[in-house]
Image (tube, rainbow, N blue to C red; front, top):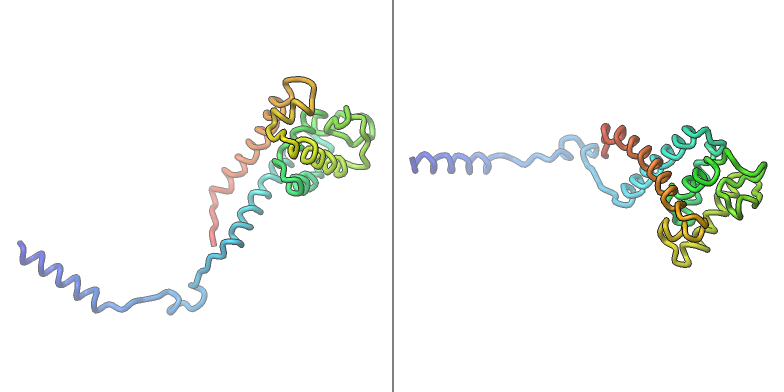
Length: 188
């Protein structure tokens, strides 16, 4: 039995010693060479995440028949510009005006900003102004959670809970999109 094991061992050594190394690049050329550019992949991942957020915001705004449905880019640009959760501003608009459906006439103020009486030229101006106001007057002054922001933003004590509910609605929509996209993974 010991002799059989030695024979198998020696045969295996000879087999591996006589084989030559094969490299895919040598056979297929440059098409087999893969390189990993971490920065490019990181950027692609961030762009994919932003794309899902855009689709989620659009889907929720459409579900509520919002007149702000064409402002998805404004929400995204503002959340990036002021480093805000991308679902915060649309959630505030959802609570304060049912996503812009019930506002003071021609105010373009879906956030109830200034008790809803401040007038904006368009939705985009309102989104940017409120994003800036949240960053500079709330978050930079220490109100970093939804509960802390809510204590300042609204006199009532249910605001934060309702904002969190809307934010979960956006997240659920994004999660649905993730189910679709994760079924088809494509990696280069």
